[in-house]
Length: 416
Image (cartoon, one colour):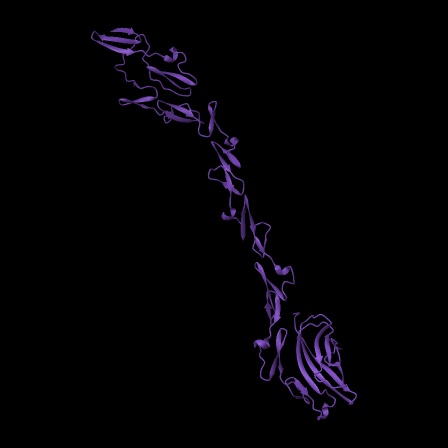
C-alpha cells in the first residue's frame, strides 16, 4: 500500500493498478478572516462553510480521520451523510431537515422556531420585540391606536369605548351607540343622544327616581276643582263622573238630566212630571182640596157661596221650582206677580206658611210684584212648600181679598 498526498488530496494505492482518491476538508472558518460579517456565525462543513445566525444550531457530518495512518472505510457500518448541513439524504437526493419539528434548535421559550431551507431562525411572535435573547411584549397602547381606551394584552391589544359608544368597523374608532335600538331600559319613551340616552314618560306619568320607570300621576290628588263632582284617576289620565240624575257636559261639568223631557220617568195617569235637580217628582194633576175646586191645571178657587171659604184665600195657584244646594245668600229665587189689578186697590205680599225656620223672606218690589229671597244657606235634598199670599185692599169699595201661590221648592243634593 502506498499513500501519496498532493494539494489537499490523498491517494491510496491498493495495488499497482488501482488508486483510491480521498479529499481533505479545509476549515474556511479558520483560514479565512471574517468569513461571515455582522451577526452571522461561520459554520464549517465538509467541502465548504455556512454563515448562519449565532443562535443557529448545526449538526456537522463526521470528517475523515486526521490520523497519520488513515484507514479506508470500506467495511465501516457508520452512516455517511453526503448532504450539506441542514439536509439529509433521501434516496439519491438531499432533503431539508425541519429542525423545529425535531427540536434540533436553540430558540428561547419566548421565541418561535421558523424552519428555513437548510437551517432555521428564531423569531419573536407578533406583538413582541427582541430585547437581548428574550422576546418582550410590545405595549401598543403607547402609540395611541385607540380613540378612547386601550387595553394591552400579551402579544396584542384591544380598544374599548366609553359608555354610550361602541367600536367602529376598524376596531379602533368609537361611534355613538343607539341605546334605544339596543334595548335601553326605558319603560315608555327613549330618546338617543350623543354618548347617552334619555327616558321620558307619556303624558299623565312621572319619571321615577331611577330615570327609567314611569309612574302614574294621580291628577285627582292635586286639586279638588278638576271635576265638578268626582274625579276618577286612571292610568295616564283622569276622568270626571257625575252623580245619578246628572250627565257630563264637556269633560268636567255636570248637568241635570230632565227626565220629564226625555221620558225617563214613571209618572202615571193623573200625575204630572216635575223635573228637579238630580231627579223628578210625580205630582197629582189635581191638587185642590175641599172646599177648593179646580178651575184650571194648576189653579184652585174657593167659591164665596161656601161658608167655609169666608176666611180662606180666594184662589190657590200651584207652582214648582228646584234650586241647588249651597246657594249664595241672600239670593232672589222667585218673583211674584199680580195677575189682576183693580183701580184703587193696594196689594201686600207675605209668607203665609211653610217658613217655620225663617229661611226665606219677601221683598216687595211695587204694588203688583214682590221677590222671594233665600235668606239662609240650605243643603239638599230637601223640600219646602211655601204659601206666598197677596192681600188686596180697596178702601173705596171697602173690599179685601187674598190669593195664594203655593210654591213647592226642591233643593237638590249638590251645588250644581
